[in-house]
Length: 432
Image 1: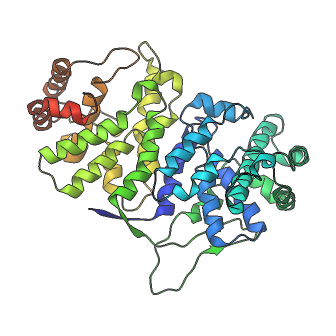
Image 2: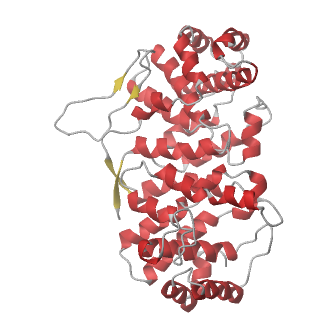
Image 3: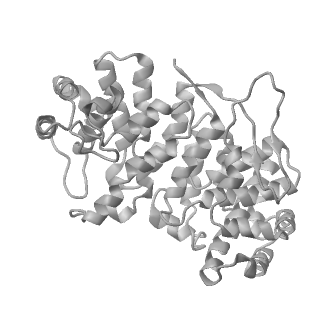
């Protein structure tokens, strides 16, 4: 089985950018929650491994949210009746061998302390989950206050008072006390006010070190410099481990609309199958599968109503949808070890005649793997129900694919391969 030289921190951090896109305009929520929670954890003197779990769980805490409408409710403190995303997120993480240990944190990250303290799980998990809950409340309150005041310093006492009111009920008193201590610094609020804590969080991602250098993780507790450093070398990750991580995000993508359910899985399966039909190396076929799972990750930024629209998109709406290929590239580009997968996923809407998007590159500049992904994407989409049409039968699908070959859009050899193995391709695409 293939292995990939990947840095888990870098992959999780980059993929968490996809979760931020669900807010459309309310972005960086996960990063700000991670910043607030990390400051509290450091103040408590938590060990490096615990801080690492806190950070990863915080930036992924909303992995159960796909729809912009749900995100909007969460951003307005309408949480009491919306715990479904906690269960969804927990289930997703439990399916990933690399992140399963965080599933209980996600499950309980909206549970009131008065209930959570008696739950039969480790105390450290309870504290991490409740720390994220507190941090999320602080962020939502801060965003609400910024509507009235451009300067968050003018609202910090109001926010602190609201958190204090919930001490012992929603939040662990020890965590509230630590938050009050951390929030004494004006810089804490100014960083939060900026809306983008990337300068604080970015150094957490990954640094491949010279193995001869004895450099360990460093947690800078100076709130002024406000950096989060974690020096962790790349490691060999087995294909099934990486796939289980990537599959979390393909699920989030496909759950955004009932019309796209299983689309990413279907494209991934079909792209891998076409690769085997063309006798590509096993590792390449596995990489095609990962690219298929990730190809639409940028669609998380597209508002729900556009994906669900019954009629034809306006020019402006189509432009919004088109940018998803770029957003896919922007999310994946910083994951070292996935460079080829990033390229293939980003090019899945490029066409041989140069009229695709976002780069409008032509025939010679589009790799074979990207061409395979493009055919798999069109094929699978045509075989699924969409808001503006029902799923097409096999003959209708092939007519459209061959029309796109004739007009110079899709690769003729790949489409012929699909046509010669039509029923098997339908099964591979989960459409039969």
